[in-house]
Image: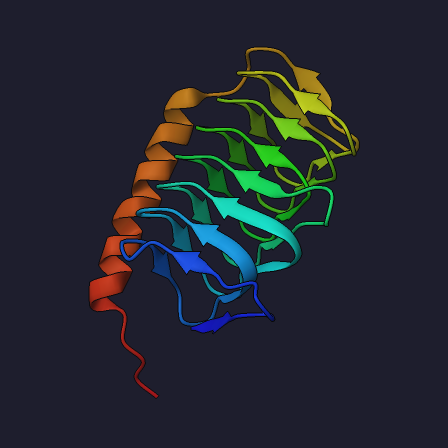
Length: 172
């Protein structure tokens, strides 16, 4: 895996986390227990801090960045789908950010909320607890997030991380 310090900014990765060999982690990045970081994900803490909570999955091709003034914080038991982009935002515990979606500076996805696939959450937007946010820019549907789907998805990625840690082998 590509894990880099940048000057005095050094990643901190819990030993129970799974980071795929083709993921890239740079600088001020903290990855919590049983979190999973999948192929081609890039977590670049060069200007600001990135924090990934326990049991959270950052899926294939996702880009996570931060600014000097806006850290990116992803809580515990979250699912961040394939090809998402998070920058300078807060994703609270037990939330889901769908594949291809973008969550920008100072936005907040509250606990138990869902950002639908390919949605764009503009700067300073707050997605309320339990809401579903869809569209470009997002439109809110209060209470439409499915917490059971988030819980099952988060646990599936914890289990898959354990599987990959013991069974993945390169054969070329």
